[in-house]
Length: 209
Image (tube, rainbow, N blue to C red; front, side, top):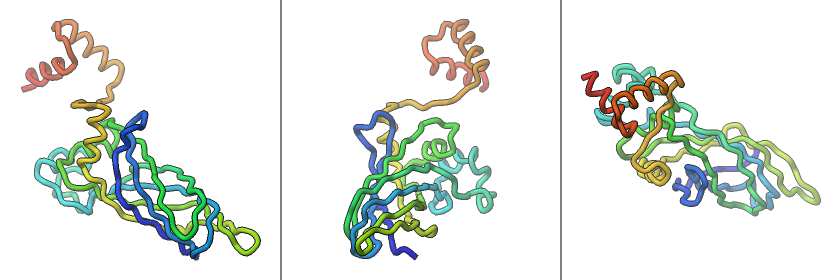
């Protein structure tokens, strides 16, 4: 089995990306101490919600994802965050690369809903790797697959995610609605002479109470 190892050294918000992007710093060691021409890497990232504790306020917001906390022993399961390709350039022995991961603030997406429900702490994540290693071997080179069991755990600070979203959507969130619902809201907004969508939602919440 190919002796190549991965370790996540941290996560940061990319301040210069055109859209919200988290950058995972990935350390790669091996195989061996020889020259690696390139690694065509595929990285799958999962959220592992069962690996952290939650406050009562967080648990209330997470009910939409996992149900009542009494059922969390069955429902608190890992879920997909992203799958991204990474081309690792030539190195010898070990190297570090950035893994950019585009993010969504859509609260209909499980990851976005989960992140938005957390107050602080870290989001426990698992990175799973696959791909192909092109390495030097004698006078030529070898082509070998990344072993299926290569993985690395990491924690995304909730503060980093909030920093990222505040940079692109300061003080805002997004909800996806059907077109007929949007038309009905537009008619209500016009009929009530309301200036903003916040005022529309606030008025409807008052009526519901």
